[in-house]
Image (cartoon, rainbow, N blue to C red; front, side, top):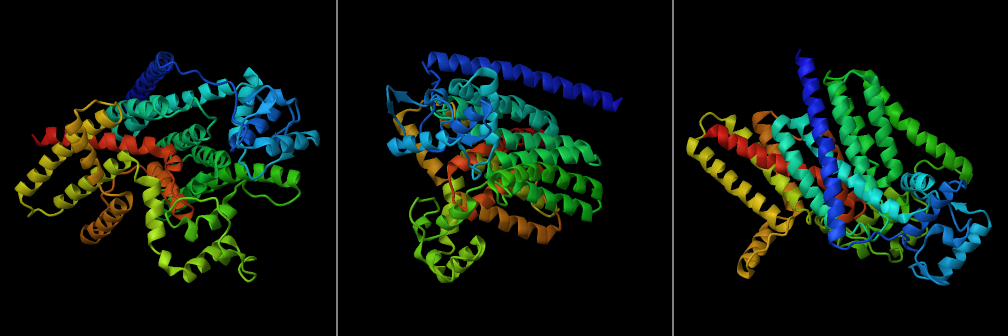
Length: 506
């Protein structure tokens, strides 16, 4: 009977999410219409776009994932006026594009295949249309926003569902309505959707931890995520260690662990075998990481961001050049100790500091950890807990107000807007918040011998993945933006959980 009740609850939640999907789709349509935004039916001839677009169009035409003008140039729907091609690739790029196409095109295996295949499948169905691709990108974000209540309900029941509804509305406002998705063909919505699928597969697996099929499916989805973008590279590695931890604690059998590994391996090895045969050399995972690793760990990138400049002379030394990339980086820092630790602080701040909801979520987690630690001490005065409860109420009100101003563009009088901006600037940087969180967690664990961090494993794994990407390579909001839905949901759960705690306390 309990199982039937849960099934009914889950069904109701899914149906409500489907209704939200329809509401968000209608809202997005109305927004784009009233704002006079038209989706362009052409693609930029330059940046990463000309490669993705030509690979997708050639795939749709049956030529495989090849770059180059195998078909007539107009077939690829690049932005142009008459005979003049407008784009970052310029005339040389145009001539090269035609020349490569005349030879039957070329495979660019440093590009991950996920996004070109996604576009190519759309083009097979609807014809080569960047406009359809852009609409589909918006719809991917709508799907995520609509099903955030399902994720919230799976982890925190009714308060999580409410947090998911609020989070979906915020995500729509921050990503679909504000982000200029009508201008570019972007990989980010597909990376974001891949990360969200990982969360959904985790929810499925957590309900059936003994199921080898659920673990294998989770592995396959994570493997496919890597083929969408290499920025998801650490998700299966971190999940493997999480599974291994559960096995050692006898909370998971070895069979799901093995199934997970096989799921990841099947997807990655299948693509790697295909790429290796076509290229005539061993290719494990398509990536540009080798060169980027050196460019982003040098003096020119000491501000924590990426700069397209020639490699540091240190990496060009004869005794350094043949070494593996990670060894080169270690030797570089041993010879440039003045960069430590500031370059890593700058990377983290560059990647995470711009995300209000990340900071809000960490502060809510810190509050929850402090309150849980205080419960360990019976002698703690009640007035201290009352003060903390009062501070929580103030912070909840502040968070809701900040969401209204920042996300939903609440207009404030000039003086109030200035005060608000100054308060926002007083929020600590990402590096400081992470440092405080880690230190408090360690101290609390030493004292109480318990962990009070209530974060879903899938959320922690995705955060750690992008944290590692940031400190190993460089920090950029564009990379972290794809998991902003996690920060938003955690922050909103903090709001609703705080309201519930204060209601219970009253």
